[in-house]
Length: 147
Image 1 (cartoon, helix red, strand yellow):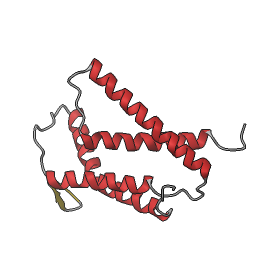
Image 2 (cartoon, helix red, strand yellow):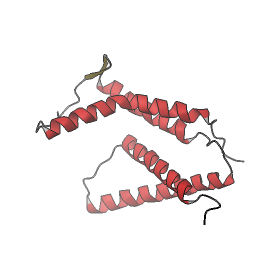
Image 3 (tube, one colour):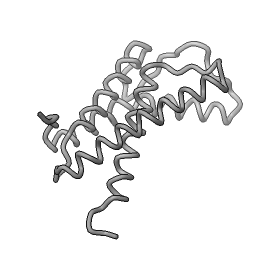
Image 4 (cartoon, one colour):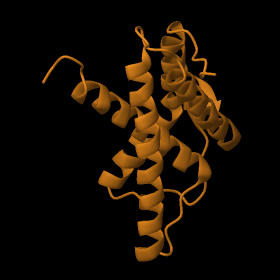
């Protein structure tokens, strides 16, 4: 029994959802970075802001983060245009390497920085992005027929 991937068209849908849901985070990050360069400290609590005329409160911001992760998962679980056993093997190797690197990173951070904390959603986001990078690198470096 093999894993059933979503059709290739879902890559575009997932990427659109991820980018659209990430717009509030991009705006907030840009403003926080701008303020830091001006010497203005970041607020202690979440402050509501607007994006395209829509008020973004903390619950909406958190919901958009979750929707963004769902969009990224849709992208990851979509087939490539040409899906064969070789690409499936590369995906599995990328998943394995992502897990090993995440576990190693968390272990090192716990040993050397006991006050290090990361949210569960943040860890999932980091793992998904790391998987995308590793998977793409494996595809580029493992092209068949090139020796």
